[in-house]
Image (cartoon, rainbow, N blue to C red; front, side, top):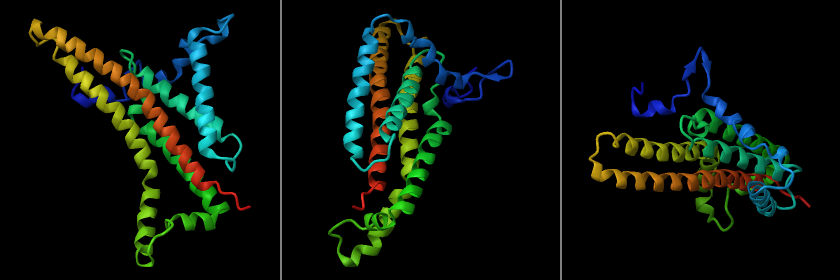
Length: 229
């Protein structure tokens, strides 16, 4: 029984002492058996078109100085987040990306690795990045503080942005869905149309948030990779 509104995001639901919430991460392997298709299906064609387009865009954002495999890593990150966001739209499936446990796990190690790589290999470039070009000398110390704080909160903003957007849409659908049994019959068509609109909006948000997370991480990588030559 739902004790409060936020209990729908509780990842501790257990059946026979086995937590089944996080199993939604692996459901994509069951729903996409592309190995059994003799010819590419429509979903396979769309998937290949999406991945090739994103690969070109990530390669452009990363630039020629990026390390080997960074484009594939960002593409895999995008597909992971998109899969979990989309699976959360199905009934009775826990949205893993709505929980900070997963979003922080994705954002914090990436940011830590990028900062270590940048400060170890391109220290001068990282120091110069703390003071934007054209900053007046009197504001240099202030800008260093601002840029340092903005760098430190990057993993927090990445994780909170993703989790908050996933939670907000699901809360709206939950609140509206709970009004159905107690609403007059005349309002049922309006509630149904609104629910369909919310599901359509959440489908777009699922893709947009995955894209935003991957693109922002790509931009952070491009800031730390610098060609000294």
